[in-house]
Image (cartoon, rainbow, N blue to C red; front, side):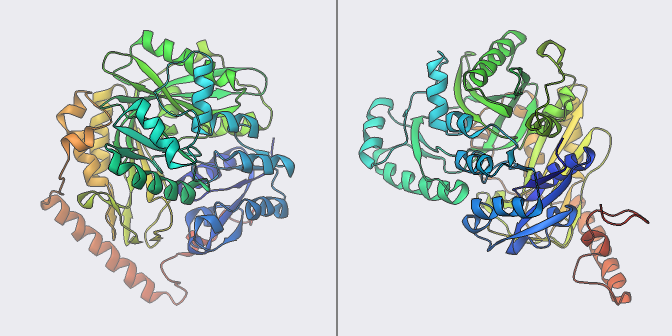
Length: 500
């Protein structure tokens, strides 16, 4: 097993990996940009290495700087998290050249599935039904114009080198084509360091269903069942759940077999997700492979009882999967809500700024994977995700009610967030009935505005009192520094033991 791992990411996913490493007795190295000096992942790691200016291309997409940081600190492996360089075959290849283990598929497998166009070719090659579209990234406008003649409008422009809704734009007419392609290229380059894009047919109101997979280096591969991710804004998931109400036992078995077949065909190892679109007649179409840990991985962990980050690290260290397909079961129901620093009443525009106060929900079956704390500043440079709220219960309705309660108990003051909006989504009768699809937000919340009431006023009163108490305590302490307490800045510690 590894002694030290560098986490090439930030925010809640970096913290998730740090916690897993702690549990496994592995030391951690964080990397950070100029605006992340006080970030939680920097505070909680054993070591931290400065990368450069805030711009992603100069920090979290800087392959040379990240590999150098691993070499200087003696890290044996790099965990890329999700986003940034997680699906970049060039980065995986550079790690291999440097003798550093990349915790994910190798560079050859990434070239086949991490690139969305290449994964379409792979799926089609083994007879899997794919969405009509381009089988190579477009180089000139003529390539896109020829493709649109075949697939027709509406179409979707997608980034070849990454996912998460980045670089995706719907094209509904010829006059929009060039503008959407140029916008997608800009976004893809900023998010993934790769501006290649392609077109595929846009399906109206399907369900988005994905299968979690694990594969080791000894020829073993399994799926850990499905997650439904149909509640989306700007093509990015904001609510996920498992199991899906639309997937029968028979359909689950067929989709799972296809997911594992795609993974085997590419000689893929480590954790990944095979994504499908499911139409109203129960037909499923291969969408893409996300060759990394997913944002929504916790709901699978809650229902299946497998720690996916532990498994990622163990597989990368050469260990075999500790279970077979027939040993895996789904137990209960789990829902995740992504908490973003965004204003849902203003088209989900980012809402950077200082968080004055955070109160996270607690209780049985409630988990909060968070990357923020009271006093931290949310920057405009990166994806605005703050945390993920996950609940688990014995059935879907119980999980839904638990999520409503948890969201009601979640308070973030100082910036706009999606907490209140998500609560209304989970409360909506159509969500309660399980009638979800990828246009759910546009259909049911076209002009959403926040509700106001006594409950919100009470929250503000309680928070104002808490903040006043913090200010009085800070004034009495001559050693108080900014908004950070000593406990927030020392990282890992133990009474009488020192740093470890």
